[in-house]
Amino acid sequence: MLIDKAAQILRAGGLVALPTETVYGLGADASNELAVRRIFSVKQRPASHPLIVHLAAAEQLDAWARDVSPLARKWAAAFWPGPLTLVLKRTELATDTVTGGYDTVALRVPRHPLALELLRAFKGGIAAPSANRFGRVSPTTASHVHSELGEEVELILDGGPCEVGVESTIVDVSNDMPLLLRPGGITVAQLEQTGGVTVATAEEQEGAHAPGRLASHYAPRAGLKLAGRGQLFAEAEALAKTGAKVAVLTADASVEVPGCTRIAIPSEAAALAKVLYAALRRIDDGGFDVAVIEPPDEHGLGLAVRDRLMKAAAPRA
Ligand code: TXA
Ligand code: MG
Image (cartoon, rainbow, N blue to C red; front, side):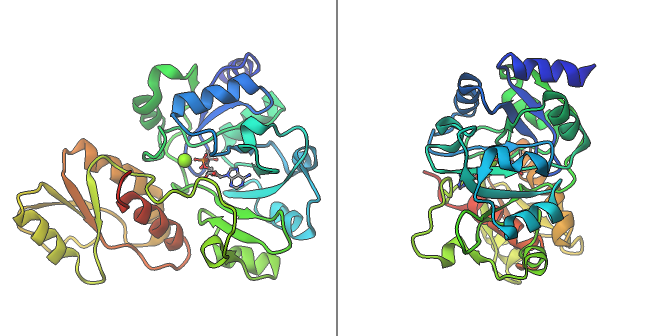
């Protein structure tokens, strides 16, 4: 069986790309130093960017984390399996390689059936970042993983297109005050309702430690420009006049922009999240110089979509 083969590869220190409900992950045995180091080298990712350890069930939480607060347990119970990552004080099971030397570890139980099957067969924790090269667009299909990492992975499990489409929400619950480190598949409103607390974002919190929060990330090779409210078509037209090959990402089929190609996207935030990364890849595949999009408002999954769009549009290093 494919799952048994995948578990064997992990036990032998190999890499398996696996589907999750958010994006595809590049998985290795979280307890195997050499295997985890290979993730960093395949991704070309700096060692200072720690990895998320994926678990089969919330019952494994205490093996990896200590001083788990009632709030963290409440969120784990409510949202696992699902697109929520909890940052907690680590136990000795979590090595420096996985955690980037921090005294915390990021944990989540994904809800894709294949990921859960693999986690149950493997039994240990699977360290898995998104299965893309560092700074690039995350994969949401097996063929994205194949074109990005192809030969460098022992096995790619194909679980179809990802259901959520953007990464998990990351909340630091290692201190008294919960901090949102990355908006994602679970909304702030869901967290606040279930937890009975307000969740501050890392930006609001002066001096908050948050590794891996580079400005430029999730970036297509083509340029991406965020249009102001109501400015989409004017921006696109202005760019086309400079001679650039322009893609306009919009749900609005009614307007023809001279010199531009329309790429259809849904207007509703959750639906947009689901196809966002595939749309960013289409910009590159279509040979466009630049794409223009009007970001959704911050409501619900809109916050995560806006975050990814802002990073994809940020100046490159
Ligand atoms: O949806 C997801 O979370 C996907 C799927 C595969 O599970 N994974 C994912 O992993 O997005 P990655 O490596 O692309 O992003 C993980 C983020 C990084 O920004 C990293 O810096 C942060 O989690 N992180 C990991 N450990 C942390 C820690 N101890 N403290 C703070 N941030 C941490
Ligand atoms: Mg990533």
